Picture 1 (tube, rainbow, N blue to C red):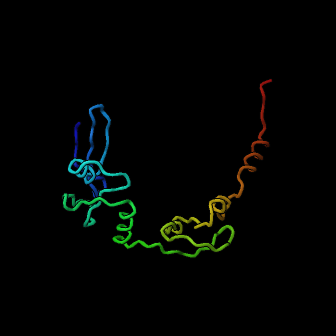
Picture 2: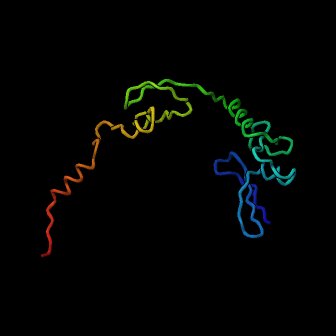
Picture 3: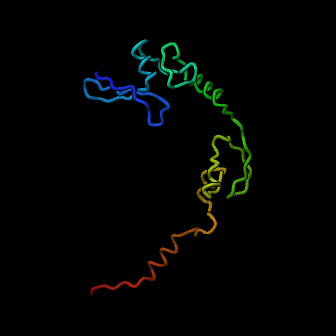
Length: 153
């Protein structure tokens, strides 16, 4: 087994190691996970390695702990200030009001000139953007039908 790293990720927010087994299989681990595996042994199913102080670059053993996935998610929500705040919207297709978690709403739709949020996928699929042909297929079929074809008879 060969171990390469630790390497900083491209966004410099975490470290990782690359492990190449005897059979040539390559596996990439977070550095914290690899430290835990080599120091304390296997990680039970349903658990993740967490940084106690929230700094993913602080990989000292005393800063690492095992948490369940649910505990880790609750900790991330508390640290990042994320909430399950709900917003009320009106669907641009059917004009019905609906509620959606704010974390699911893409604020950049307005910047990109896109409509939304929609109440459902079916409304999103039916929606026609202003200035666009609502059904381009008949126009394409009409153009193909009116084209003159010559045969080499």
